[in-house]
Image 1: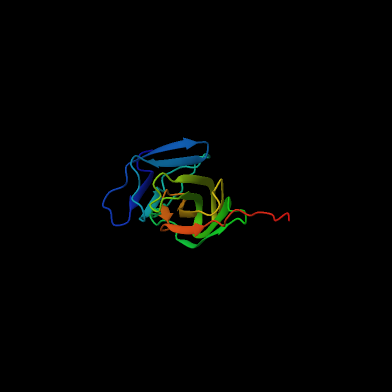
Image 2: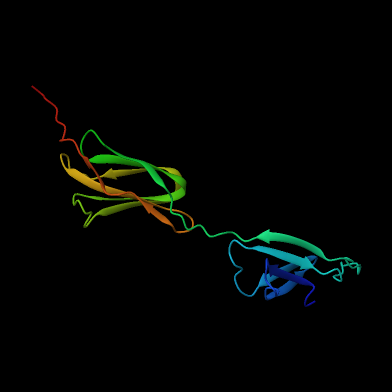
Length: 173
């Protein structure tokens, strides 16, 4: 019944507006508006609430919970490096993040990454490695790594560069 199950934010003068639904012996309290993040809330089940057998609790049952504070910090990126392949047409870009996050590398021959290609890997990881292919031997390449966490916060490195080696050849003389 109304008032038999209620939730109130710490320091608030009034209960949070909510609806109560029951299924069997489970009661669900659903606030009509989002609860404030990082806030302690107190839930009270009135002592007049009856069990299925008709017996009442007798006294109020109270407990608290704290809503989560949203994650607004981007992943911290460290240890960024690029290792060109020996033939000059491939490279491996690696880095680490302090939390699980996706992997992306923007790369190209323009120092401002205008017209850059992007390779994206959506699996959340903390140790990242992206393979680049189709590079031209003997060229300077610029790149930036990006990682996005589960809360959509994106961290990015600055623009870095690497040089691909000249094309290899075999002396047949």
